[in-house]
Amino acid sequence: MTDASLREMICALAKSMYDRGLTGGSTGNISARTSDGGLLVSPTETSFGRLDPGRLSHFDVAGVLIDGDKPTKEMPLHSAFYDTRSTAGAVVHLHSCHSVALSMMPDVDVDNFLPAVTPYGIMKLGKVKLLPFFLPGDPAMGEAVRGLSGKRCAVMLANHGPVVAGKDIEAACNAIEELEDTSRLAMMTRGFNPRMLTQAEQQAIITKFDVEWDT
Image (cartoon, rainbow, N blue to C red; front, side, top):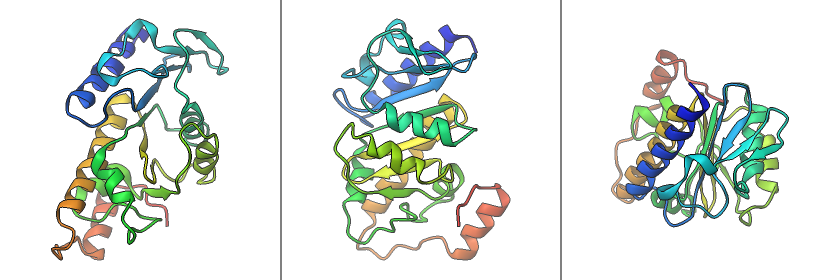
C-alpha cells in the first residue's frame, strides 16, 4: 500500500469509528506502519471525525518526526506495542463507552478482561490485560505495556479506554471494535446470569483458530 493510500485509509477508518460513537470529541489516537518502516500517527488534540491525511504526524524508521503536526501525547503507548510485538502494523486507542464501563466493575478479571460471551472476542483479541489507571499521557502506560513482553495484542486502560495492536490498520480497527462489542454484551447481560462459553468451548476456539493465548 502506498503512503498516500495508507493516509486515506487511516482517516476513513477513524471517521467511521467516530461517526458510530466509538470515540468522541478529540479523544482516541491511531497509528500505522508505512511501507518503509516509519509511522503515520494522528496528531494531538484532533478529532477522529476530522483527520486530515496531509497533516498526520510522520515518523521515519528511526522514530524522528519528519513532517506533519505534533503527534498524540499517547505515543509511548504506540511505541511500546511496536517495540515489543514484531507483528504490530497498526495501533488504535479509543475511549469507547462500554469497555470503559466494564473496566470500572469491581469483579472483572484483571488478567482476562473480556468475558467469554462470543467466539469473536477470543479469536480477534486473545486475552486482554486490564491495566490500572494512569493519568492521560503518562509514559508509565507505555512501560506497563512493555512489561507484558509482547504477549498481548490488547490492553484495557482502567477508567480510560482500550488499546489494540493489529497486523495492519484494518485488523487493528476490527479487533478494537470487537472489544467494544464484547464489552457492550457483557454490560447488557450483567445480573442476568447469562450462559458464557464453557472452558471446553473456549479451548476449541483457541485451537481451531490458532489464537495467541498467553497462559
